[in-house]
Length: 178
Image 1 (cartoon, rainbow, N blue to C red):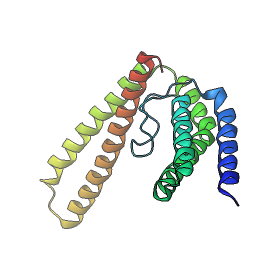
Image 2 (image 1 turned 120 degrees about the vertical axis):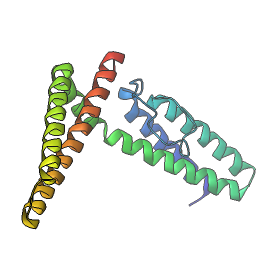
Image 3 (image 1 turned 135 degrees about the vertical axis):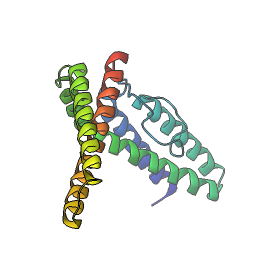
């Protein structure tokens, strides 16, 4: 295949990608979607990343015309990685919408926050109770049993705190309008 045929094929792929992105191109995300090593763009909209892909494609055409093979390989590899990343992002859009709908239908985050804070207080009290009991048990078997209970409670506390962080982030997103 000639270089011009490959460039034309790549251009077609970019145009197809642009058409797929169009319905969601203007929707902002809460943070940058890709790593800075992949895209220099720090925006949150897919159209901004697509614009960078087009700039890189123009750069690829230029280095091909100038016959700089080392740069051609670098720019082409980066461009293919960017296109692949955008295609993956598009493929997950339905999942993201479903998550957002689930989040929005989740109801009142503040009541969930209070509920989980109560769970956290109860778990902390239970852990404190088990720790004080652990110092008073006499047999090795009772100590093992108490340590297993403590480990289970600490695991529950960790999951509870993770849920609290997630709820707090949801409240922040809701207040920011995302």
